[in-house]
Image 1 (cartoon, one colour):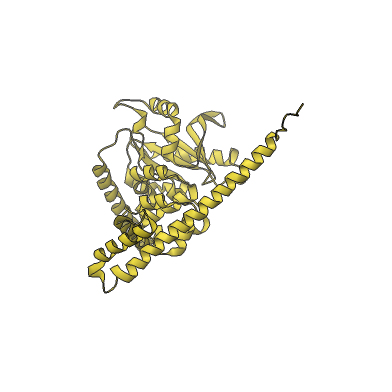
Image 2 (cartoon, helix red, strand yellow):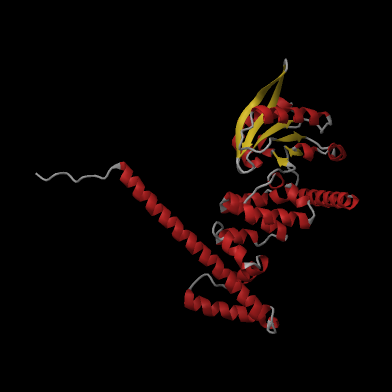
Length: 348
């Protein structure tokens, strides 16, 4: 009687599967890099030789003819629109070394999402965050659609300062609060009406914590609600406590139903100093705080110099206005913020 075949043990099967999967990922990564570099080189060559040269007037005609020849020889992927997209790719990302680095993580589909963005710093922000946090194409698209760049502090800085911060991110992968914290936060998913209490806001966030974490950004982990803080004989309660892996910090969040008030600063400073003394681990950076308000008092916030205390004040919106209104609002905020920063710099 024949013996039944011997089966490999589970550990062997899992090890072999891991080897196969790792090999597939390396092959896919190599193909991805080569494809992105190929498209960049094609776009660069066309731009230099035709569109930026003496034959620029015949550019469209020549590109169309080139497209027909390449399609005949190599099949789909070299249509007229594809070639013009490659040209734009080389113009939007003129440094080939940066493309070589980004394409280790970003695929051609990622780059296609970035090309329509008009501002170079905006493209650079999304590209670098996508690389560091390994966003999928779908996640990148959502970040762009939700106007994440327009809502972070970096977008309100003078261009030179913003460029320095992005260069540091590229060189060290170090994510700063100005790349993470937003203003305003979009909380329309909570479904709150016009009249609600702070407790209603907190309860709604806890019911839909997954969506709230997505709005906070990659790297946030929820730790506690109404965290008890004992100081002397008094008890205080922090609304929400999170940890951010990218920043390596505890992040305290206080929810306020109305406009910002100056007294909120002292309350948050107390919480942050207690967390720094009792909850912060040796390998962590000092805790940060976010005060989420229904409205802001910008001059009070500036005079209080909250950023020096590690406190970020932001509005939250439970109903979103039309995108055009948001864009106008962000544009105005950027101009005002840059003028203030430049004025402060000239006074020093």
